[in-house]
Length: 349
Image (cartoon, rainbow, N blue to C red):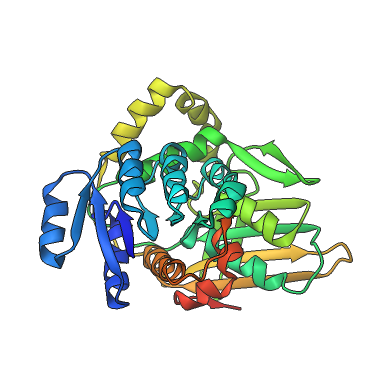
């Protein structure tokens, strides 16, 4: 049985590949026709499937029935459901790295469908979602439902030279379109995008500013804690008050489909220079409060956020290929427990 890597020449795909091969897995490279894909296939001797749209990828999955599909192609709001359903039709399993609230909600809505087919679907497989979800799950082990939870994601990622790419561009735009969100009284409510700015002192002595963002970490933290009130914040949000002030306007503009398509194309093509990661470590942080007033705080520490993402995807895919998943649709710690993060090289304290 094979593991398919969609977007095999992208940053996450390239990083996942050697980790799977080192563990003896049979891997198939999937992507659009390109010299980079052919060069990768020639160098590794791996089979290639050429498919350049979600519908074509889905048809190939239905015909071949791979054991596990790792979707790294991005724009998950548009691609994930189609590809995941193709996996379900053959009883296979699916992983993606979506970290926007809309995409994760759509994928998790396939829970009953996946469970009936014996398939496992996992969204948010990477630093985004797992770095904070694992901390919340650990803090809440053997505890009743919490009253309140706040999570903060502080990723440190080295930048590769080259275009930003469609996957990251779509994530940035979708966050702005969704706007601010938080849970209050058990209900998902609107808030101002970038609200709740907070200066964190990290365990290694460095500092980072985080503010609210409508990420899938919000949903994962709420589910892991059972809290009626939940907030998710990220250091990826603009730090200045002036920049945060224009985010709602940008979101309204990008909600117009012609504007979104234009912006996606332009943003994906933006060329960046290589740069080292800004901090020695990436951090996930959570504070959980219970109805009796008890409060617990925890941290996850890892290295480069992208390296951690690749390690988590490889670990989760191998577990699924070996039949260690549970049928249904989940976020990563809900599927495998917080120790998935430890197995991928993180420390939780």
